[in-house]
Length: 308
Ligand code: G3H
Ligand code: 13P
Ligand code: ZN
Image (tube, rainbow, N blue to C red; front, side, top):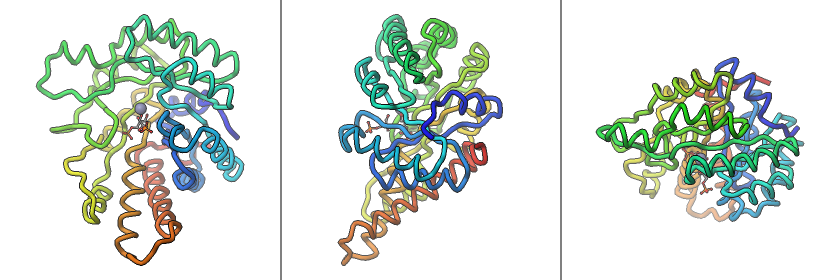
C-alpha cells in the first residue's frame, strides 16, 4: 500500500538503519528501484522533485507509482522532494502524496518556521507527514573558518527549537553533503560531531540526509569509457552513510547514483550495438543497472533489507 513514513521511521530509528528515498522521473527508474526493494523485502520512499514534475507531468508519475504499489504490494511512501512553497505542498497532498517536504531553508529561521508550520497544519489535517530543512546543503572546504561553517551547517539548538515550534515529522540537516556529482574537492568530510549533537538534542526524532549519493566509481568509469566526460566527480563514501544511520538518520536521499547507473548502461549498450535503434534494448539494461545498484544500497549501505 501507499503509506506515510511514520512507522517506517520509528522502526528505522529503533534499529539504526535508514530507508532509501530515491528520486523518480520515468517508468524504468521506478521499475528498477521497486524490483530491488521487492527482492530485498525493503520499505521504500519514492520521491518526486519539481524537475521530475516538469519532465514527466505530475499525473504520470503519480499513476506510475500507484502501479508500482499495486504490482509490488510493498509499503511505499510517495514523497514530494524539495517542495518550494505551501501551494505546491498542498497540491501534492490533495493529489494523494503521503509525505511532503517543505524546503524553506533559504528563508530566515523565523520565516522557515512559519512556512513549515503552515504546511504541517494542513498536511496533518489530511494524515500526511512533513519533512523540512534547516541549514544549507553545501560542501565546505576543510580550511574554512568555523564561523562560516556555523552559518551554513545546521545549528543543533536551532534544530531542536525548529522541531518543537513546527511539529514537523522529520528534518533534513546540513552537515557537509550537497546535491549532484561534485560533492567534495578534496577529501570527503562530514561533520559527524554536529550530527551527534543534533541527534542528542532530538531523541527519537528521524533525521534526513540529502545529497547522499556515493557517485559509484564503476558507473563513472563506464560513462567516461563510452564517450562521457564526467571528470573529478566525487560523492559521499559508503561508510559515512552507514555511520550516519547510527545517529538518527532514517532517510537517505539518492538521485545522482540513479542517473549515473542509468547513463552508464545506456552508453555501454549503444556503443556495443551501433545498429540498434530500439529504445527497449538500451532502457532494459538501464533498468537492470538501477535495480542492482539499489539492491547494493539497501543491503550494504542502508541496512533496510528484510525490514517489512
Ligand atoms: O534535489 C535534487 C534532486 O536530485 C532532484 O533534482 O530537480 O533536477 O529533479 P531535479
Ligand atoms: P544526490 O544528488 O546526492 O543523489 O542527492 C539527491 C537528493 O538529495 C534529492 O533530494
Ligand atoms: Zn535534496
